[in-house]
Image 1 (cartoon, rainbow, N blue to C red):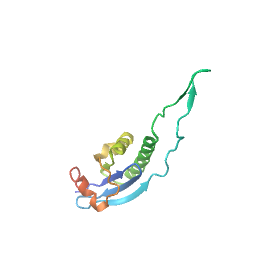
Image 2: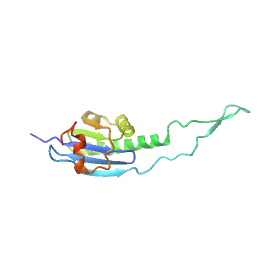
Image 3: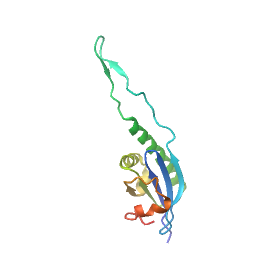
Image 4: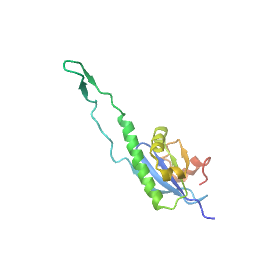
Length: 144
């Protein structure tokens, strides 16, 4: 029987790691690690508007907080890298782990091939955990 190969994405808002599992008892091997290259920066305050001549001026509310925009952009970048690895490798399933806000961003931007292969998503920040210690965090949902 052919072993099940699993691509695992571990991410938070600033860093991400891609790992692979080649079958039960093999643990996780790190493929790559990357961090946020740039952050979106804006003026401290949004602009102002004047409703009509002689009328009061009103400030604009920011549509989306800067931190949320950075999180969304990093989630898209991370998923693009994961999708490229998925297309190049012969993986059978996909798993990911991230803190709540980042996990939501990842779920919102996941492409169809990865979404269909998603076997588990874990609500934990595991970026700083050593690869040898990661399987125990997934033991209730996936056998590594």
